[in-house]
Length: 155
Image (tube, rainbow, N blue to C red):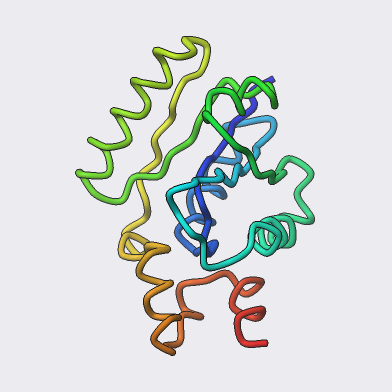
C-alpha cells in the first residue's frame, strides 16, 4: 500500500496546497495531510481549525485524512505507515531547501522517499505567509483559499 504524508503548517490551507494534494492523490492509496507542530512558529489559526478545514475539504474522499504531529516527520511516517513524503515546490530556492530536508529524512529513515510536485503557475505566488499578511491588514484573501476556508474567515 502506497501511503503518503504531506507535512506542513497549512496556516491557512490555500489553493496552492489543494492543487498539490489533488494532483498527488492518484499516485497513492492513502494520503495523510500532517500538520506539524513547530515550537518556533506561532500559528494564526488553531490546530483544530486547520484540521477542520482539511477534513471538511476532503470529507467525500476516504483516501484523505489529516492529523497533527509533534517531532520528526520521519517519525510521523513510521506512526502512520507512510513510505512517502510529498512536498510542493514553487520556486528554485524551494527545491534547494526541500532537497536538504529530504536528504536528512533519508539519512534518518532510508525507507521514506520524498516526492516533489511543482506548483501550477497560477498558484506559484500563493504562500500562507503572504495570505496571513493580507488577512492581518484587512484585505480580501478569498481568491487564494478554498471556499471551506474563505467562508469561515468571513464569519
